[in-house]
Length: 115
Length: 111
Image 1 (tube, rainbow over the protein chains, first blue to last red):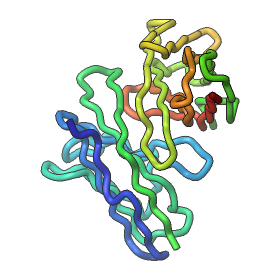
Image 2 (tube, each protein chain N blue to C red):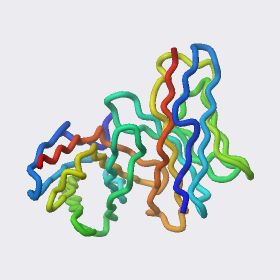
Image 3 (cartoon, rainbow over the protein chains, first blue to last red):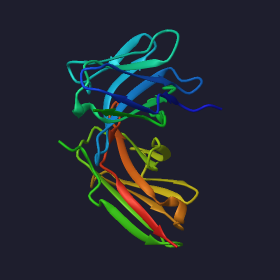
Image 4 (cartoon, rainbow over the protein chains, first blue to last red):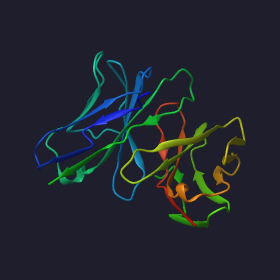
């Protein structure tokens, strides 16, 4: 009965490097959402994906950030040329979306630190 | 533009008493509301939700009340237990897709 899985749990990168965050949804869920939490703030929506499709990326920064959810394998959030302001906790959630009001269940998060 | 607001950064309650956490929203298009609990270094854990067609939903010690005219919802925990100490986030959805979160309220339950 695995929940949403994220790896790595902690990631340290130097400025200018790339960060790749992975998310495997709960079994039976085909909808994935990424959120970011900056220190002392609530979670902010970034992107919503179904298999092979980006449904809503209205919360994604226009540059350096991208996300995918391939037919096989986990969803990936990719941050190119990281800067110190990218340091945050990144959470993935999944849902089954069988109804409009399906609950999103969250993973444990990846804490990104940019040196 | 904070569409979901939790105006109390923290709340301290004695064990066994009622905890009431409040949340206000501005977007009248929100039709689904959720409460999550979060411990440090963990992801948010779903607690309870309510659809805009209802004004109350109860699950064990947790009850959520929705007042649409006031654009206000609250989470009641009774009786409060020390294990309830965590950060509580209110979240809302208008389109069934993205959740809009409040900034959270730190609940401390003293034994």
